[in-house]
Length: 189
Image 1 (spheres, rainbow, N blue to C red):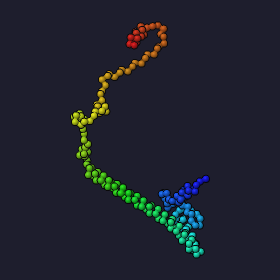
Image 2 (cartoon, rainbow, N blue to C red):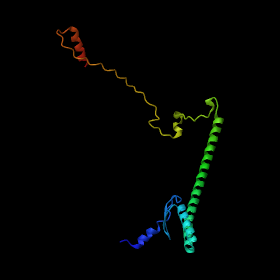
Image 3 (cartoon, rainbow, N blue to C red):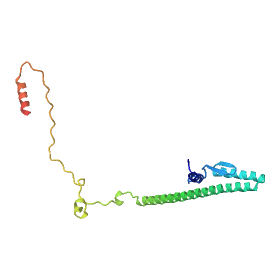
Image 4 (cartoon, rainbow, N blue to C red):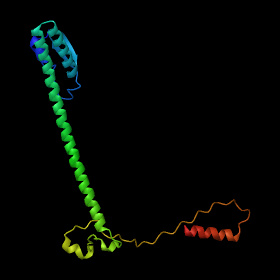
Protein backbone atom coordinates (compact mmCIF):
# COMPACT_ATOMS: atom_id res chain seq x y z
CA UNK A 1 0.00 0.00 0.00
CA UNK A 2 1.29 3.44 -0.90
CA UNK A 3 1.80 6.05 1.72
CA UNK A 4 -0.32 9.16 1.43
CA UNK A 5 2.78 11.31 1.81
CA UNK A 6 4.39 10.15 -1.47
CA UNK A 7 1.08 10.37 -3.32
CA UNK A 8 0.44 13.91 -2.19
CA UNK A 9 3.92 15.00 -3.28
CA UNK A 10 3.46 13.77 -6.81
CA UNK A 11 -0.06 15.17 -6.96
CA UNK A 12 1.06 18.67 -6.03
CA UNK A 13 3.52 18.82 -8.96
CA UNK A 14 1.01 17.71 -11.54
CA UNK A 15 -0.38 21.07 -12.66
CA UNK A 16 2.82 23.07 -12.54
CA UNK A 17 4.17 24.07 -15.89
CA UNK A 18 7.50 22.40 -16.55
CA UNK A 19 8.61 24.90 -19.15
CA UNK A 20 7.88 24.47 -22.80
CA UNK A 21 4.93 26.02 -24.53
CA UNK A 22 2.42 26.91 -21.80
CA UNK A 23 0.13 28.71 -24.25
CA UNK A 24 -0.80 25.49 -26.07
CA UNK A 25 -0.31 23.08 -23.19
CA UNK A 26 -3.35 21.21 -21.88
CA UNK A 27 -4.02 21.57 -18.14
CA UNK A 28 -6.31 19.69 -15.79
CA UNK A 29 -7.85 22.16 -13.37
CA UNK A 30 -9.64 20.90 -10.31
CA UNK A 31 -12.15 23.63 -9.63
CA UNK A 32 -15.19 23.75 -7.31
CA UNK A 33 -17.46 22.38 -10.07
CA UNK A 34 -15.16 19.46 -10.89
CA UNK A 35 -12.34 19.13 -13.38
CA UNK A 36 -11.88 21.57 -16.20
CA UNK A 37 -9.50 20.47 -18.94
CA UNK A 38 -7.96 22.52 -21.73
CA UNK A 39 -5.42 25.14 -22.69
CA UNK A 40 -5.10 28.14 -20.36
CA UNK A 41 -7.33 30.24 -22.63
CA UNK A 42 -10.03 27.55 -22.71
CA UNK A 43 -9.90 27.18 -18.91
CA UNK A 44 -10.15 30.96 -18.45
CA UNK A 45 -13.21 31.07 -20.72
CA UNK A 46 -14.85 28.15 -18.88
CA UNK A 47 -14.28 29.70 -15.41
CA UNK A 48 -15.54 33.09 -16.61
CA UNK A 49 -18.69 31.39 -17.94
CA UNK A 50 -19.16 29.56 -14.59
CA UNK A 51 -18.63 32.88 -12.74
CA UNK A 52 -21.36 34.57 -14.87
CA UNK A 53 -23.72 31.66 -14.23
CA UNK A 54 -23.04 31.83 -10.47
CA UNK A 55 -23.59 35.61 -10.49
CA UNK A 56 -26.92 35.21 -12.30
CA UNK A 57 -28.02 32.65 -9.72
CA UNK A 58 -27.02 35.08 -6.92
CA UNK A 59 -24.14 33.03 -5.45
CA UNK A 60 -21.46 35.65 -4.74
CA UNK A 61 -19.04 33.17 -3.08
CA UNK A 62 -19.07 30.82 -6.09
CA UNK A 63 -18.71 33.82 -8.44
CA UNK A 64 -15.60 35.02 -6.58
CA UNK A 65 -14.19 31.48 -6.48
CA UNK A 66 -14.56 30.99 -10.26
CA UNK A 67 -13.07 34.43 -10.93
CA UNK A 68 -10.03 33.58 -8.80
CA UNK A 69 -9.52 30.34 -10.71
CA UNK A 70 -9.83 32.24 -14.00
CA UNK A 71 -7.34 34.88 -12.75
CA UNK A 72 -4.78 32.18 -11.90
CA UNK A 73 -4.80 30.82 -15.46
CA UNK A 74 -4.89 34.35 -16.84
CA UNK A 75 -1.61 35.06 -15.01
CA UNK A 76 -0.06 31.82 -16.31
CA UNK A 77 -1.07 32.74 -19.84
CA UNK A 78 0.22 36.32 -19.52
CA UNK A 79 3.60 35.14 -18.18
CA UNK A 80 3.94 32.62 -20.99
CA UNK A 81 3.06 35.23 -23.61
CA UNK A 82 5.57 37.70 -22.14
CA UNK A 83 8.29 35.03 -22.27
CA UNK A 84 7.41 34.19 -25.86
CA UNK A 85 7.48 37.85 -26.83
CA UNK A 86 10.87 38.34 -25.10
CA UNK A 87 12.27 35.28 -26.92
CA UNK A 88 10.87 36.54 -30.23
CA UNK A 89 12.39 40.01 -29.71
CA UNK A 90 15.75 38.47 -28.77
CA UNK A 91 15.73 36.31 -31.91
CA UNK A 92 14.79 39.31 -34.05
CA UNK A 93 17.61 41.35 -32.49
CA UNK A 94 20.11 38.54 -33.16
CA UNK A 95 18.84 38.20 -36.73
CA UNK A 96 19.22 41.97 -37.28
CA UNK A 97 22.78 41.84 -35.90
CA UNK A 98 23.67 38.88 -38.12
CA UNK A 99 22.18 40.59 -41.15
CA UNK A 100 24.05 43.83 -40.41
CA UNK A 101 27.30 41.84 -40.07
CA UNK A 102 26.64 40.11 -43.40
CA UNK A 103 25.91 43.47 -45.04
CA UNK A 104 29.16 44.94 -43.67
CA UNK A 105 31.17 41.95 -44.89
CA UNK A 106 29.52 42.13 -48.31
CA UNK A 107 30.27 45.86 -48.58
CA UNK A 108 33.91 45.32 -47.54
CA UNK A 109 34.29 42.49 -50.05
CA UNK A 110 32.80 44.60 -52.85
CA UNK A 111 35.06 47.51 -51.90
CA UNK A 112 38.13 45.25 -51.96
CA UNK A 113 37.11 43.82 -55.30
CA UNK A 114 36.47 47.22 -56.84
CA UNK A 115 39.76 48.67 -55.47
CA UNK A 116 41.80 45.55 -56.18
CA UNK A 117 40.66 44.94 -59.76
CA UNK A 118 43.38 45.61 -62.30
CA UNK A 119 44.06 44.24 -65.74
CA UNK A 120 47.60 43.02 -64.93
CA UNK A 121 47.79 40.20 -62.35
CA UNK A 122 51.42 41.19 -61.73
CA UNK A 123 50.22 44.42 -60.11
CA UNK A 124 48.23 42.56 -57.47
CA UNK A 125 49.95 41.64 -54.19
CA UNK A 126 51.95 38.45 -54.50
CA UNK A 127 52.56 35.86 -51.78
CA UNK A 128 56.00 35.67 -50.21
CA UNK A 129 58.29 33.08 -51.74
CA UNK A 130 60.90 31.42 -49.55
CA UNK A 131 64.13 30.26 -51.12
CA UNK A 132 64.55 26.88 -49.45
CA UNK A 133 68.24 26.43 -50.30
CA UNK A 134 69.28 29.84 -49.01
CA UNK A 135 66.87 29.94 -46.09
CA UNK A 136 67.55 26.50 -44.56
CA UNK A 137 70.25 27.69 -42.16
CA UNK A 138 68.35 30.69 -40.91
CA UNK A 139 64.75 29.49 -41.00
CA UNK A 140 65.10 26.85 -38.31
CA UNK A 141 62.79 24.54 -40.24
CA UNK A 142 63.25 20.80 -40.00
CA UNK A 143 63.82 18.98 -43.25
CA UNK A 144 61.24 16.29 -43.89
CA UNK A 145 61.30 13.49 -46.49
CA UNK A 146 58.53 15.29 -48.40
CA UNK A 147 60.62 18.44 -48.73
CA UNK A 148 63.71 16.63 -50.06
CA UNK A 149 64.11 16.54 -53.83
CA UNK A 150 63.33 13.15 -55.27
CA UNK A 151 66.33 11.11 -56.43
CA UNK A 152 66.23 9.75 -59.91
CA UNK A 153 67.03 6.09 -60.20
CA UNK A 154 70.44 5.18 -61.70
CA UNK A 155 69.41 1.62 -62.55
CA UNK A 156 68.92 0.71 -66.14
CA UNK A 157 65.43 -0.20 -67.10
CA UNK A 158 65.01 -3.91 -67.47
CA UNK A 159 64.75 -5.36 -70.95
CA UNK A 160 61.48 -7.05 -71.71
CA UNK A 161 61.52 -10.84 -71.64
CA UNK A 162 61.42 -12.86 -74.75
CA UNK A 163 58.45 -15.14 -75.00
CA UNK A 164 59.18 -18.84 -74.53
CA UNK A 165 59.21 -20.90 -77.62
CA UNK A 166 56.41 -23.36 -77.77
CA UNK A 167 57.46 -26.96 -78.28
CA UNK A 168 57.00 -27.80 -81.90
CA UNK A 169 55.83 -31.11 -83.19
CA UNK A 170 58.65 -33.62 -83.44
CA UNK A 171 60.19 -33.28 -86.84
CA UNK A 172 60.75 -36.38 -88.86
CA UNK A 173 64.34 -35.46 -89.65
CA UNK A 174 66.49 -33.29 -87.46
CA UNK A 175 67.76 -30.45 -89.54
CA UNK A 176 70.98 -28.64 -88.91
CA UNK A 177 69.15 -25.33 -88.40
CA UNK A 178 66.98 -26.72 -85.60
CA UNK A 179 69.90 -28.21 -83.78
CA UNK A 180 71.80 -24.95 -83.74
CA UNK A 181 68.74 -23.08 -82.43
CA UNK A 182 68.34 -25.57 -79.61
CA UNK A 183 72.00 -25.21 -78.67
CA UNK A 184 71.70 -21.42 -78.52
CA UNK A 185 68.56 -21.64 -76.39
CA UNK A 186 70.15 -23.95 -73.84
CA UNK A 187 73.25 -21.80 -73.78
CA UNK A 188 71.17 -18.70 -73.16
CA UNK A 189 69.34 -20.28 -70.29
